[in-house]
Amino acid sequence: MASNNGTVAILLVEDSELDADLATMHLRRSGLQFTIKRVEEREAFTTELMRGGYDLILSDFSLPRFDGMAALSLARELAPNAPFIFVSGVLGEEIAIESLKQGATDYVLKPRLERLGPAVQRALRESEAQNQRRRAEERTRLLVAELSHRVKNTLMTVISIAQQTMRRSDSLKTFETAFLGRMHALAGAHSLLLRANWGDMDLEELLSDALKAFRRGDGRHVILQGEPVRLPPQHALTVNLIIHELATNAAKYGALASDGGRIFVDWAIEQRDGDDHLRLTWREQDGPPVKEPLKRGFGSTLIQRSVGFELGGTVSLDFPETGVVCVLQFPLTPEQRDIALQA
Image (cartoon, rainbow, N blue to C red):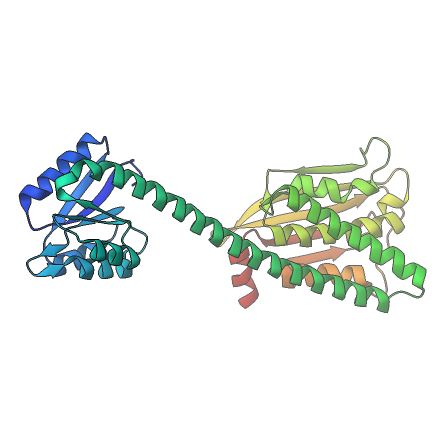
């Protein structure tokens, strides 16, 4: 472990200037790149520990107004990840064993300071290995918590879709077709996010995949156009479901129900109060004449609720005779979404 510039920051507890110079000389001979700060008393040592930024602590065992075990106790409390090495003139076997039990990394006797460099190098390597393990454990903990959260959200989405689809289905076959279509859309979005390691998702790739099952022939009847945009994972899942609903409706009643029908999906980033918002427009052309339905089905309800509650945005869904037009507008980051939901 070392600072960003590769230099090890050392805190030395030593009352003898001569011994401090000897320790510094042996460290330089070992090839270590370091800076060193020497303190003699408890107050100065505590101040430096609280200031932080030290990669290694070296301490004499016997000091006029301070002792090594007290220094070790303070270091374990205020700088628990920094290796601690005793550098002492005399250190009995029992004391040496006890110091290691209390958390010291190693000890070096002053008559054998040629061991100091190798001891420091070994302590730094072990410390870095421990830090890497801690970081890996923390990443694992965060990933498990995030996975649990996402699985819970996904299951709640599945339950809601199942309930709402069942209420609006007049037969088991109708339910099966609608429900499985929505599940396939959700699974497709999850597969894309998995390939992206559940990071931000490219919007054009997401749309292309969501509309893949609705393309015919050369696919020129589906036109996607917009600037590069990446969506957070939860946004990507919601947008995928919305596009699936629009495409399913278009395949039944709209532009995708006729050979000459076309779908245009375009998007752009707009600034609102200094924040990035996405404006995404779905527009159908050259399909059968469109009439506004007398009542809204689950697809329309899902779109309205998803944009409002999941994305923190707004949606307009219009039915001109020339084809359905749907415009989504929502903040691009989850933080902006949460602010919008609280407003």
